[in-house]
Amino acid sequence: MKPESLAVSQQSSALLARGRTAEIYAWGNGRVLKLFFDWCPESWARQEARVTRAVHAAGLPVPAVEDMIEVDGRTGIVFERVAGRSMVQELLARPWQLYRIASTLAELHAAMHKCEVPGLPSFSAALERRVRGLDGLPDATKETVLRLLDRLPEGNAVCHGDFHPDNVLLTERGPVILDWMTATEGNPLGDVARTSLILLMGGPPPGQRGGWLLRQASLLADRIYLRRYFALRPGSREQLARWLIPVAAARLEEEIPGEREKLLAIIQTGVAKLQR
View 1 (cartoon, rainbow, N blue to C red):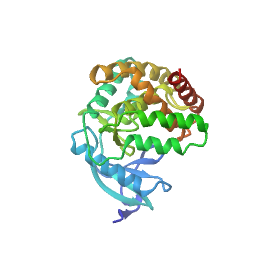
View 2 (tube, one colour):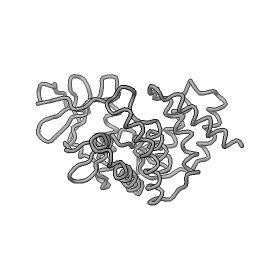
View 3 (cartoon, rainbow, N blue to C red):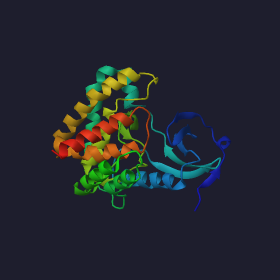
View 4 (tube, rainbow, N blue to C red):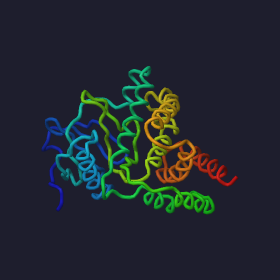
């Protein structure tokens, strides 16, 4: 069944934010619309709505899904509107709160990884597909990464897939986690590796407001986040280092400006250590 079709003019709407796959609009009273760009498959929106409903029912702090609609030919999800600012916005406004913010990020992630939601896609299988599809990685390195991934243990924890400070809102009711489109089930350390990698990449692209501060803060936040996470959940830095290799390889697919050389260095250094 197709989502209900509307036009933007049918609602009082104001653009609140724009990301790589969607725009966020105010949408009536107490609601927001996540409107995917027209190049995004409708299945992406349906998957995010389904997963968000499931993790909301499991008790995780996420916005409630109210509806799926079509607006000007684009698929959208209507969520409850949650008032607050992201961890990144909080850090820019109050940089002395870095320790608290990074620790809270770890605590949220640890709590998420205690949850199981049957029926989610496999984290490891998603990584394997992305690595196999890479063109810019030498074949020998690609095969080494795939062999490593095959030996890494599976899991059944909820994995967000893109858990970072800009996807957490700080609200009066506590932190709220956004953007569940890439959620899977798998080994929590793979999800931790993804978050750590995002922090290691050092913040926003050059030219964005607060870029220098966020790049420096991200590196320190990574250390605080990992220390706090491993105080709450089992695992070791050595195990994490193994997950970081295929996670970094998969991120190459995203072609984020300024990251390619850093990611290749992480992959090559990790592979070299394993072959000693």
